[in-house]
Image (cartoon, rainbow, N blue to C red):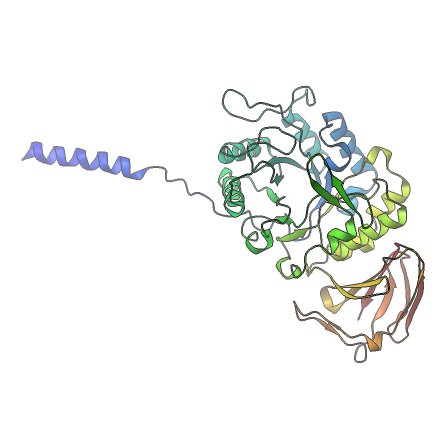
Length: 412
């Protein structure tokens, strides 16, 4: 009997031992609250593609501090595709390119953190990145631990080389892996909008791309013959998706792509680009070479009035109110019952604006905000000129040059 009891006890211990398994509580979903306003920062891809190194990153960090960009709200430095070696190491870990980053990635991240900035890296849900470096497919939890050990703050996760992969599942797997690794990391879903990430992305990521890549032009389509795909001018991207603004808000943003301000358009077009990204509550991620940045470009990127529209705590994406004869009007509800209004000249000639507030009440069908100018008088501030220009009692009249923009703030 004692022998039988001992056997039963030992058996129970063995069964219990096997049944316990891994009791680590696996995280589910993104880290909440990391992007309550649209993220602001810099990404290497638009100007440098894979031609990146630690000297560039350090110089960029230094300029972000000295130029006033950090003071204006720019927080992240994100290294895009090309930061890693072409092969993983013997343990399957990613390897930062030792030629581009001879001091090691951890030392570089510590340098960026020491400047009061946050640091981001790039990878891809597929078997390879878009530039044919090692992708994360099958290595999600291992890569998440690698990023956590490096102390990164932001992960841009692309969608190349993903044949046969389910997008919501792939992004959820990486989101859970980041959560399990334990370090709060902003998760940027760079899925291009093909699988409608706005429908399923909110519990998974803090922001999601809504289009293919941007191109430094006002309203063009640039066709890449070698890959049979297109990049888009900023106005095309602004209008590419209909009825998705209701899916965007604090900690779950529609991402209209990295900015092309300072990358070859005119200063007027750069100004309009920045105004539109501010109205759309898109992340403000610069993509130009700060080392060659003109004072005009810096003034656009650090315009505190427009940044305040983008970063408004209400977190509502603007919408197109009207479009007539090449003149578009966009509106954005702001906190405290205020509004931002942007006039955009899409045409090739100067347009005259004569906007009678009393004949143009605003109704936001998605979020329920209204402005009846017959009942409430608003003060008007021109956000680019940085001056008060009257109230909504009077018709707003102005001449607007081709591709130019006027952005107004209406305050009760």
